[in-house]
Length: 290
Image (cartoon, rainbow, N blue to C red):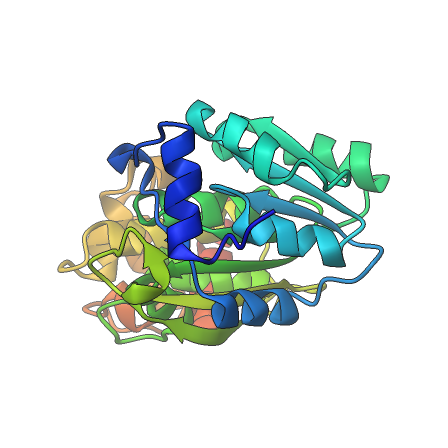
């Protein structure tokens, strides 16, 4: 088998199968050995681990993961890549390829079938167009996942790590802070991919928290408050909460909650920390249940 990080060899493989890149899937294949090694090393893959890889492409990272892990489950949405993966990974008996959309894949069943229900590790080169929905799906469903090590657009990695007051700060930042401990592994220039994207990327590792960093009466309510606050960024927190139908709060209840939380009436949600959102949601919970 040839080197799947060698552009000439990769082009030959793609040509042999008549493969053309699909813009709708945001396909950019990693062709840099150093970055590949950093991902594998920082994902901390061990011999007993079961790894879920999202979007294996032609199997570049899959091949290296299979050398380190006990089992690799590679979920690929593009049917045209399945015969290529079956070819490039022919000698790797611990790899299972699933042709499916990751957002429609039962990850809990994968953990049950391949790892006796114990937490698995997720590794991926995520397509830019669907990064946030995938991350939110992996976090909010409380799946049996130990860690998530992913390549994302550099701007998205910054959004995951940023704090209150930043224009990048939002629901994704707070979900990452609530569910995980994040760490930027490395930056990745655009020339590390085929085809070359228009933006740079970054590898970020999210280690799932064993305990939540804040205490909330109702987790769903916490994230409803967060979404309401960022749904209309230019408006005040009060307007955001009042105009978010799912919360079902009257103007008077919104005012009461903000006073109860000791916030100014003109405060904007983008300046609140995770702890302050937790405080706010607990106040709303108390008001709604009084």
